Structure formats: C-alpha cells, structure tokens
Amino acid sequence: MTAPVDSQPKPSSNFLRQIVERDLADGTYAQRRFAGSPGDAAHHAAGPLDPAKVRTRFPPEPNGYLHIGHAKSITLNFGLAAEYGGVCHLRFDDTNPEKEEQEYVDSILDAVTWLGYGWESNGTSHLYHASNYFDFMYRAAEALIDAGLAYVDEQTPEQMRANRGDFGHAGTDSPFRSRTPAENLARFREMRAGALPDGAAVLRAKLDMASPNINLRDPALYRIKHAEHHNTGNAWCIYPMYAYAHPIEDALEGITHSICTLEFEDQRPWYDWLLDTLCTLGLLAQPRPHQYEFARLNVTYVITSKRRLRQLVDEQIVDGWDDPRMPTIVGLRRRGYTPEAIRLMCERAGTSKAGGWTDYASLDIALREDLEGKAPRAMAVIDPIKLKLTNFGELFGGDDRLEPCHAPANPHRPELAPRAFHLGRELWIERDDFAEVPAKGFFRLYPGNRVRLKYGFVVECTGCEKDASGAVIAVTATVVPDTRSGTPGADAVKVKGTITWLAVADALPAELRLYDRLFTEAQPDAGGKDFKAALNRASKRVVHGYIEPSLANAQPDEKFQFERHGYFVADRVDHAAARPVLNRIAGLKDSWGK
Ligand code: ATP
Ligand code: MG
Image (cartoon, rainbow, N blue to C red):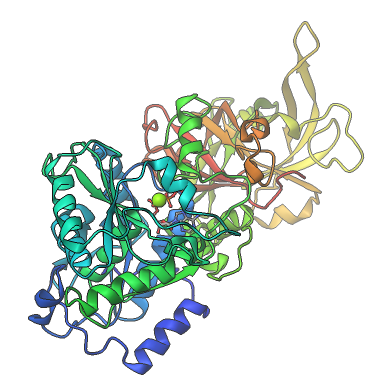
C-alpha cells in the first residue's frame, strides 16, 4: 500500500472510522483467513490469518473516465485501509458483457496511482477483475436452486414488471415460482447452454413478493445475453446481475467493509441475505463483508454523471475528457490541481449519511494551501502593453543596457536560489495598470503618479502614446533614481501602488489559457434540468502574454504562482520550452462571481 504523502490531512473522525475502530476493538475480523487470492470458503480456510486488518475495495466499472466523485470513493477506501493497517483492492467491476475499453482501464489505473494510492501490499497485487468470478457465481446460483431458493422465471419482462407491484402494493407470485429444484436446475442449465434467446428467462431468488422492500421481491440473479465478454469471450451467454455479483465479489476477496453510496441502502438487506445464505450453504466463509453507505460527493458548478460528461465531450462543448474544465481526474490533473489538493478537499468534504453540496471553491482553497509553500513565484503579463522608460539610457549607461534584478523563488523557501531577470528600457506591463484619467482610488500608472516596479525601481508616469484611432499603444515613464528595491534609497520615495512587469528583452512569449467554471449555476443538472442552459460561455479564454525568463526550462505539469494572477501550470499536453503554454488553475483568492 502506497502511503499517502506529505500534506495528507489529519483525519477527523467519521462514522466509517468509528465502525472500523469498533470492529478492530471487537476483533470482528481477527480470525479471518485470506489465501492470498480471491476464492471460496475452502480456498480461504486453507490460507493463513489475514495480515490485513481490514479490506476495502474501489470497484469501478471500466465504462468511462473517473471523476471527482470517484476521487472521494478512492480516498475513502484506500485511505481507510492505509489508516487501519489494511489493504484496498482495485476491482474492475466488469460483469457486463461489454466490449472492454482498454482506454478506460488504463485511465483508472493511472488515476488511482496519480492520486497517491496503490494496490500492491504484502508482496501481492490486489488488482482484480469481477469477471474472473463467473464460475463461482454460477456454482452459487446452482446451490441456491438446489436449496429451493432460486427459480427460473419465464414471464415476459412486462409481466415481471407488472407483478412486482410497487410501494403501496404487494407483488404477485410468478406462475413459475412453484417449479421444483430439479426443474429449475434443468432449465437454468438450458439457459446456460444457449437454448433460450435473450430475455426469454431470468433466474430469480425466491424471497418474498410481498416484502415492503421491493429489492427483496425475488430479485433477478442471472439474465440471458448472447454477447461476447472481453475477458471470458463466448464462454457465457448468461451473465450475473449487479446486485447478485457485487456481494459475491466482496466475499470472495475477503472484503471486510464494503463502502458504497446511499442509493444502495435499500439493497443492504439483500446483500446480507445473499451472503449469509451462501455462508450457510458452505460456499462462503464467515465473518463475511458488511455494506456501509455514505452520501455521495456533490460539488457545486460541476456535473458528475458519466452520461452527461460524455455529452460534453461528444458535442465538443469541451475539448475532450482531459479538458482542464472537466471534473474528470484527467481534466483536474491537466488543469493543474494536485493529488494533495484533491485528497485534502475530499477529506474536508467529510463522510456522512447526510447528503449536501461541497463548494467548488474548497478545491481551490486546498490547492492554494498545497502550492503556497511549494510553487515557485514568477511574474507574468497577461494583457501586455509597453512601458517605455525614457530616461533609462541616461541612468544606466545606454538604451540597450539590461539591469539585473532578483526576486525570491518562494518566500517560504529561502534556501532556493533567487529568480534572476532584467530591467530594460522597454517593459511589458498589464494594460489595466495604466489609466489616462484615473478613477477614484486608482493608485497605479497615470500621468504624474509614481509606482514601484516590483523588485525594480520607482517610476513616474509621464504619459502615453496613441495610434491614429486614439488607442493607447504605449505608456511612458521615467525612473526615479536611487529607488532600487532592497536598497536604503528605496524607502525614501513613498508610493501607493506596486506593479508587476517584464523586460521586453528577456520576457518569454506564452500562450495562457484562462479557465473558469464550466457552469454559471451551482447545481447545473439538479432536478434533471437542462445543464447545457447553464454553460458558462466564457469558461475558456486563450491569450498571448509574457512570462518571466525563469520559466525557460519549465516542464509540463510544473506549477507556478504568478504574482497577482494566481496559480498556473505548464500544460501537460501542449507545453514545450520553445512554445510555452500555461493553464490558470485558480486565482490567488476566491473572486468568482465578485
Ligand atoms: P456515475 O454515476 O458517474 O456513472 P458510477 O457510480 O456508475 O458513477 P462506478 O464506476 O460504478 O461509477 O463507480 C465506482 C465507485 O465510485 C462506486 O463505488 C461508486 O459508488 C463511487 N462513486 C461514484 N460517484 C461518486 C460520488 N459522487 N461520490 C462518492 N462516490 C462515488
Ligand atoms: Mg455504476
């Protein structure tokens, strides 16, 4: 198990931690055996006592890219295992005969690893595929039939639906419910042998068609599907239903705490019945896994439904699954969010039974906390206009001279070598740092006003140059002598404003991608409303600006704090030293909508 790294938050307790601690104190799972690989009761009985104190699992279906909600499940399951001396399994829940999407499998492995977790422990890889358990699932189904606890139902799907009843009405027994075990077994084997077409029959558990819990009204265990499976090929034409497969997967793997989201709460009685029954039949071993439900993570200003995320990609509303505006792990990563920030945000979002919304801003807050002490500082000019220092040559010995300047790489890391750059006669400054006619409270450049060029000198604005249309194309100023930052003279001249800048001579041109929230509404798809109506049309703005020469060797994925502008990352796909491309991750403070 890879231990989560450095800025892992100090955990506060939650109901799941309390359950695990209770089970550890009670020794609930202390005598559990684990044979080193998944298997039935006999397999594990032959193994040693499990060195893992708890076993959790993250069980994605490889049918899409993971998103921020999955990150919550990953941090929760891998986090609990790490905290309590356990192991977390990564299990591909691939019981649907769908074409394997290797792309999704790879991206899931990558996402879990990137988030800081691993599935190797005690010299064993705990990477599993649910489809490897098909043989056992079939054997268990025959055992249930033998015990008179399952039957082959040949009602039409419509009849089955109608006879299930609803909240206010008990269901009606199927006419096939009274078949004998021998009849059921023969028919089930015909299903398996391919004698029946898709939809002609299902295997159902025989529970209680009048149960107030509709999940207990003879749930389906197997359906017929003449389809090739990526792992098992054409070995099967019947496939287990999720509700049947999932508890068995947990039990075969020796999971202790099976954590899922609240919508599975009504399935728990079935989960318990199935596993207890298979234990009684001797196929699985006690102590068996238990299911616990928590409220899923909902984050404002994003959507997490795989289907809707796919729509954004397919309709080219975004530039792909890893578009930096997407809440997918690949998108968050490309945007520049760090694993530490995502883990911190997930931890702070809490784990409870009560649903709720986590403010997107909490992710930015976590990011700032992570990067504040880590990311090198730099200056960047996003909306450049020239500032001409008209007395530069006079003061520094020639118009072509470059005057060296320095700045700390990171104020929290004084051990780092300072950044070096130059002051020249011509600089790039932000267009909005100049106003010909200043508004009240404007302290930056306007004719007659003095400001400090950060890490440089105080300058006094003398005016501007305009083109034929009257648009300002350059600002002019003079350097006030003896005001270099860090020298005794610096304090002699008081100014109210400080601006960032870069020398035209050594600034590096860069493409800056300024991302913002993809939606203008906090809950864009709440209540099934049309989320596309809430798209933020200004969620991506690409500008051409300048960055400090200290970024000449910036590597893809490297993060910086641009003074005044916020946190940026060198784009992991498009950035190259010869053609810098940086994404804005987040501003220096939360200013959204203000
Ligand atoms: P989606 O609803 O986006 O399609 P899913 O639940 O179908 O997601 P799975 O691959 O089945 O996707 O999910 C793997 C695990 O991630 C499940 O245990 C699921 O409960 C969990 N999970 C998915 N979304 C969230 C969320 N928003 N918060 C917490 N856990 C989640
Ligand atoms: Mg699912």
